[in-house]
Image 1 (cartoon, one colour):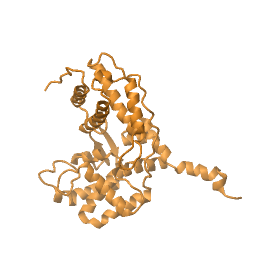
Image 2: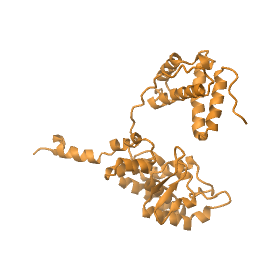
Image 3: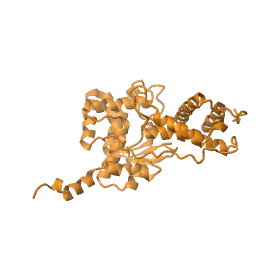
Image 4: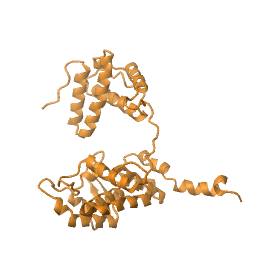
Length: 317
């Protein structure tokens, strides 16, 4: 089916064309769905203000939409939208307008000079300490063979620092037991990379492959490395539920799921003196500024200096 530029200036037809274009460019379905949700919310607001034409969207309109977002309160708890959510909802409109201008659907982009609000820097939630990571892993020992699988999954998360969707798409031949590394295929930004993993992690994966996977495998398994109880590759939500369960069982008083291991891996590497650029490569970050948040999370070096130099920490002589 050919891409057809909208024949009218209605906002709805322009949105439909833009989303079709995103899919044609090969953007992930999750990304397109997220954009569609943001644009639907904008359309609902625009309709309520009798704005139906794409040509009516300009800086003044986005200023009004931003004011609405800042004043909006959630129904469940009465809290405002976070800054990141507000920025995302404005960004999806601005990016659409720029794309439509490039594709000559619009003769002029009236939103180009709209300034997006600054996001600020948010730190990850408190991460698991090294001892807490061990405590969480120990919980799987009570679940027999499935506990072996779950330990292999969680140690892989922690040892490699990979993302949830990256782990869910690991295949059998992505594990190099000789070099102790994983091949991550089409990670974020559709980039392949290799990441090292600990020898102990390789041993857990090998045990899982020998003792557990043959029992779970069926016609639906394919070449997926980790299999759910039904023999199919894990869905993202299943992985989150699995990890969250063990964190709760460990009673470490820290919430979270899969990203806990990713954040913990990066923070512990910085704690132990890893160069930030090595951590960037390890995590697969395109921008170093994304990785630098872990310098702020890591308190080891700051605590050492604080204890050595701050009078309150030194105590009375």
